[in-house]
Image 1 (tube, rainbow, N blue to C red):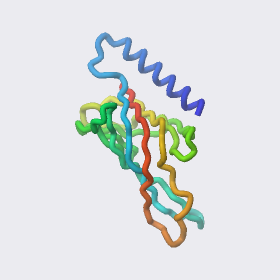
Image 2: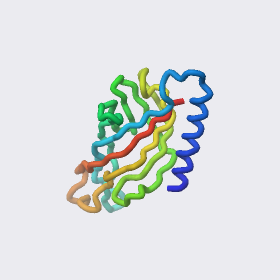
Image 3: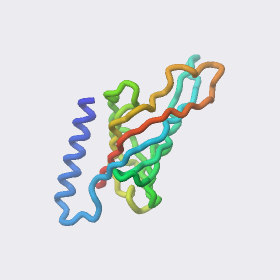
Image 4: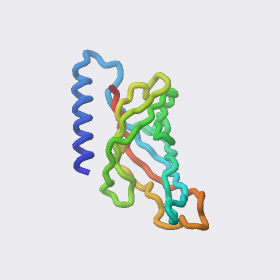
Length: 161
């Protein structure tokens, strides 16, 4: 976790310096969103055993006032209500301080579509996670292909370039 926090601090420092170097930024250099939804897992066979495998997240993104500002889905992708999308690639994962929660992540944008809120997002940080961990059991030879939807929430920080 220490490494992830250091990476987050470096990203924050770089974007803060970049934002201050501009005379009058048209948009804030970072967006914070509260994500709430489910992590979808599929039961899959691998080397004679069975395990839950992450299929996709399915979550709504809200701002600090509770307004829906977008959604999070497979890719991993984030789409703003204006239609713009950013797809991320993981750079770093750290276990959550909460053992029953999914990992904290730092991702870098690998593609964008549309113009708007997500069009120039360069990094995504998932932190303060709750829930979302695959079940410990229920995936066996009698359940291949079955799905479970595990509730989760997280804070997402989107850093623009």
